[in-house]
Length: 354
Image (tube, rainbow, N blue to C red; front, side):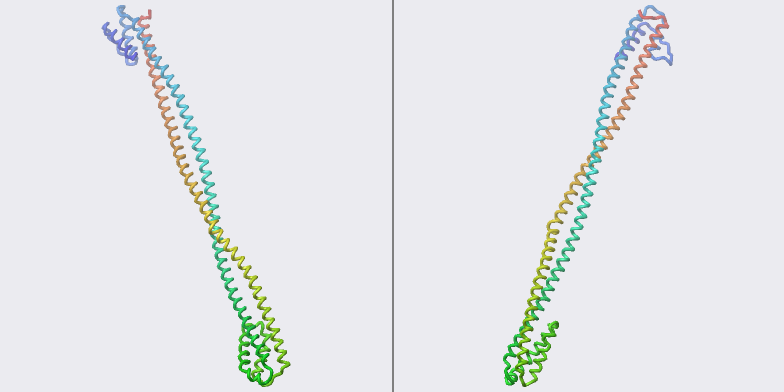
């Protein structure tokens, strides 16, 4: 505004005096005006008023320079604060991103370990189920064999009881003849039992032969018959002892197999009902935590990008602000230089301050 007033004042003074300005391309407009005034060499023009206007105009430009420098320093302080703020943000976000990536990797590794444990648990479960089926099959098979062998002993003992009872009833040739058919029946049944109890063949093969002879003969040797009865009683007792031993052995083996079966069933239950669900839950938790951290990581990466963009934008604005500042100072200094040149032009024309 003061520049405008100063130039207006010069224009009015010149207009009132009827002065024609000398045009010189290389001079500042103010210098051209003052140079024209210095060529007039008139004492009717109040040059003191012109010096006052030039001083005010110079002071106006100097004030603008001072104000611009103060504003620039304030803007620079604000710029440094903004840069520091965004750089701190960038460092914080980078550190956060690095920490999140470490945590996500650790969770991922833990998830892989849990998945490996789950795979092993599933394999253990399959193996245990197979073993359980094998044990159940083995127990059923052992029970079948035992029932068969136990029944064979029972059948044989029963036949021996019948044979002993029959022999005790034979006292003479008459009773022998009466019992021949029964003797044949007992002989055939004993022969069948002998096939089943092949391990005991050596014991009662002679008995089979004896009954065969009795069914064919009509005389009785009571002494030998009594010996046979005694032998059959001994054989009967041996069979009973063998049956009891078989039963005891089966009971012991069954208990052992049942204990293994119970342990295997407990293992299947533990893996199927506890371990696998627990591992599945832990894996789900890790996956959920990874998803949460990935979301936080994406936000941090976005915030980092924004902070970097803000820093670049701030730096670019400061470059523009500095360019504007330098241009303004250059412009104001040019104006001051022009005023100085104008005063020198007046001095050259013989016009001095009073």
